[in-house]
Length: 144
Image (cartoon, rainbow, N blue to C red; front, side, top):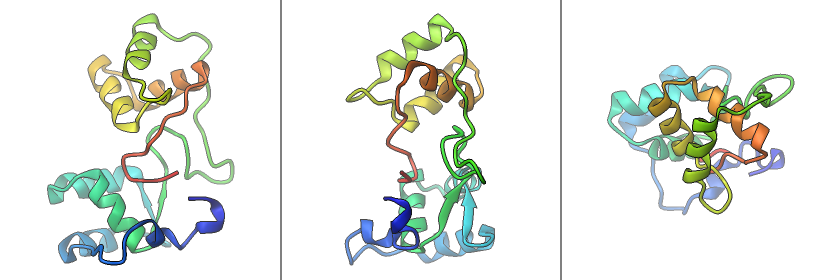
């Protein structure tokens, strides 16, 4: 979705898609100024035992903006993206990234898994991707 689609996120989903009431309430309790951070979305998903994708669909249907991406890729003001490319990508990290590519992109879920596996901050993985000129997508919450 583009900036022009802001507050029309629900249009990404079929008309019959509904938000679970319990999930909706958990989300609405955490929303500030119609925004929810990626980390809070992750917490809600874990606590509610739902997937990040389900949480993202609920956010779309509720027209809530996802901010402060944990990979630093979107949702920051005023610059939007805060991640910066690293000067040198550690060889082990580069190998993990290249092995996890799908269609030339690194899925967000794969970036998180690489960070967990190598015991690195998630933003270090996205910084390596920036240096390698690899786009991280799709987002687990459905952003982009």
